[in-house]
Length: 257
Image (cartoon, rainbow, N blue to C red):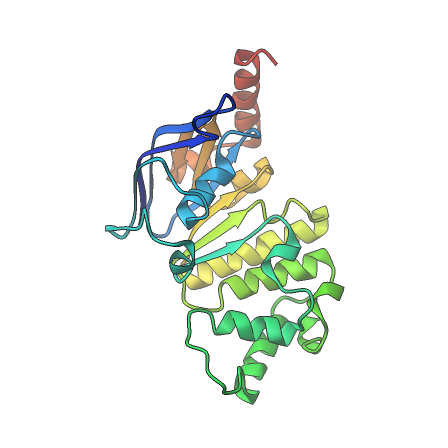
């Protein structure tokens, strides 16, 4: 369980450009939740993810995982339990290294490094089998540099790498936004498969309202640093894209757009 209590975050504090994004934000992410987070640009979606992952420090409030406070914990320590996939396919992999080298690094995440080999024949076969399940032909390209792959192939690889070690939480930051529609569908199906197989608690920020309604058990809508919609279970399952669009239109009218 992830719990954010009374979170406060001010950007450019002490300047004329100061922006108070969060002022008393509360959120509980229950074990097994697959939450889709939607909202307009600047509503706080990515900032929420960065705060959970420790990439952005808060100015007030408390963050805890399974009852243990992590508010001041460094991001690299949090990532022992968290896997993250970014919008840019280039951010989750090292382009100058081969697929095998990338997977070996991901497989050794959090482990002590010595002068021994980073992998062996048995693990290489395991990597090949994992890649085969992607149905992208990557199982025969272990020696190919990742930078030469397509965006969809890199994103599928990044998603797979983020879940190679035992993690509790998967953070998806618009991970299909930079892909063409067909590839985005493949990545979403793969995402759903991995989340279910590994039982991962997942938070997915997306601008695709259909993905928000089709996947997961819970949906949040954010606006100006506040959660204005939180639907779960049957209520979420009954939510349609048109319902979300209607709420977006109401917000737009209120803001004078």
